[in-house]
Length: 136
Image 1 (tube, rainbow, N blue to C red):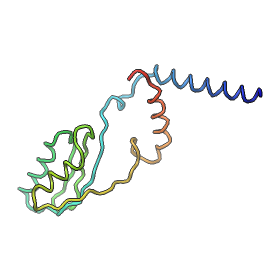
Image 2: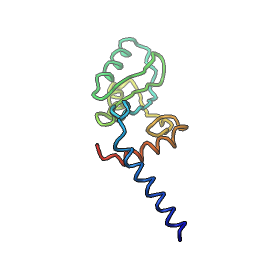
Image 3: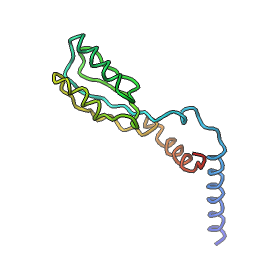
Image 4: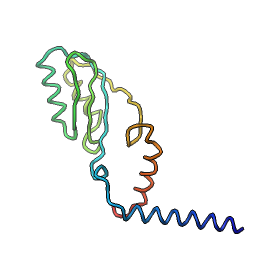
């Protein structure tokens, strides 16, 4: 019975300490930035420079798009965007409106919010600390 009480007390103190830490620590600069997602698209290779410039500029002008990576003659395009402002479907619609470009979205490796799968356990700890933060 003493072991159980001691274990519960240790877990309660650890939880309380983690909650205090979550609410007292300063925010990291990356926590202040909006969330960004990335999608990759397979498309018909663009060989015309006028069409290439037009497609690149039209994607870049789309609200919420942060970066576009498109190479002339390549069949892939990568787009970084804010998921609150735009979606991959809007980019696909914009690309396929041209009629000459056939588009499909590629499934990228799901690496979680923090990127690299090696950092997965640390990302879960960060998410737990963020959920205990009442200052939001």
